[in-house]
Length: 102
Image 1 (cartoon, rainbow, N blue to C red):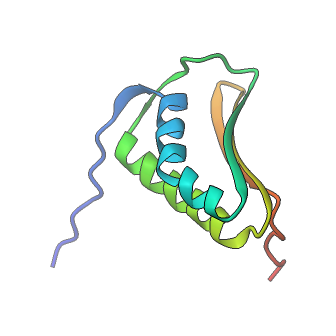
Image 2 (image 1 turned 135 degrees about the vertical axis):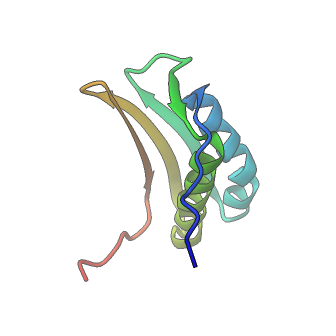
């Protein structure tokens, strides 16, 4: 059998809008655990347009934020966006215990 390559649908979108949509999906889940969930941009002004497959990006972000909610018992979850050397950096930061070195 021949595998189908991953099909991507690139569009120019505002990354802050996409992140906010992901946060809106999960904010109630975070609040139910007593966690704050917010977005933070570091020296990047909205709107910040990038070319991306927004559905795939949202899938990834929702997965990362969900994991952060699952493994953080108290405190915060923050989605950070920054621009370094003409590249976009997105990080999900939380006050959880973190991962082991293994």
